[in-house]
Image 1: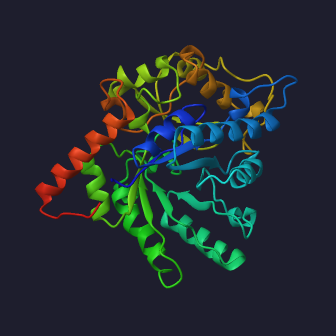
Image 2: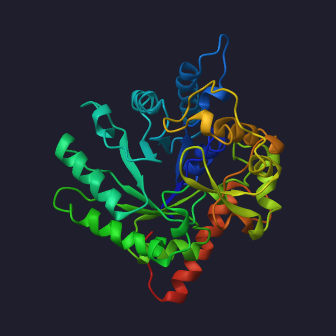
Length: 351
C-alpha cells in the first residue's frame, strides 16, 4: 500500500465521508475540525459547543464507515484549538495533525492513557527544530511524524508571497532539511517525515520517497471524488478549471493562500465583502474590523455550493483533474503510476 495521508480540508470538505473512504483504501483519512460549529448548528446557537458536538459526530460517523486510521486536522490559529485537541484525544482519534501555527504545547493535552499520535505540519526545518526542541524539553515527547508542506499546497501557506516561486523554498529542498532535523533525534525516536503540497502523481510520490520521505500528504486530488464531503458545485470548480484560474490571495488568517479565482474573490478585491461584525471569532489572529471578508463564512458557503459567496482553496496542480472519480480510482491510479515510475527508475521500493 502506498503511504498516503489525505490532507485535512475545511470548512466541510474533508469530513467523515472522505476520511473513511481513504482509510478504507489503506491510507490515513483526515477530518478537518475547522468550522464544524457552522455544519452542526443547534438552537440556541453556541458556536464553540457546536464545534465540539460536530467533531464528536464526525468521528462517530467515520468509525461506523471504516476500521482504518482516522486523524483530525486542527489549525493552531483556531480560537478553539484547545477544545478541538481535547475532544480529539477524548474521542480516541488516531492522530492529530496540527498546522497553521506552531503547536508548541500540543503534548500537554495528552494523559498517560492517551493513544492519539501527534503530528505537526511545518513549512521549514527551522519550525521542525523549534517544535522538537520545545516538546522534548518541556514534555519529554517528540513528534510521531512531521508533515512538511511546500509552497505548492492548497489553502494557507507558511511562506511569504515572494518565496512561493523561489527554488530555495521548494518541497524538494525542504524535505531533506526537515529529514535532517528528524534524524538528529534517531537515538530517541524514529520520526517519519511526510512530504506535502502539489503532489498529484505516483511519480511525485516516488520522487519524495527517494528523497527520504516516509510518505506523502495529498489534498486536492481527493476533492473531485464521489466521497468528498463538499457539494457537487464545489467539486466542479476543480473539474472545470485551468491553471490560469489559480491565484494567490491574502487570507484574513494573516497568511497567503492558493485558491481558484471566482466572483466572490473579485467582489473581495472590489471591497464589497467587508464584514460588519464577527459572530464566531473562529481565528485567533483575525480582526474583523480590518478583514476584507469573513473567511469561515466564505469557506462554509463554498462547501455548500454557493460559489458566488465563497471560494475554493486548491493546490498548484488541482486544475489537472478532468472528472469526478471514486477515492478507490484515485488511489489505484496513483499506485499504477508509482509502479511504472519505480520500474523506469530501476529502483524498487518496498511498499
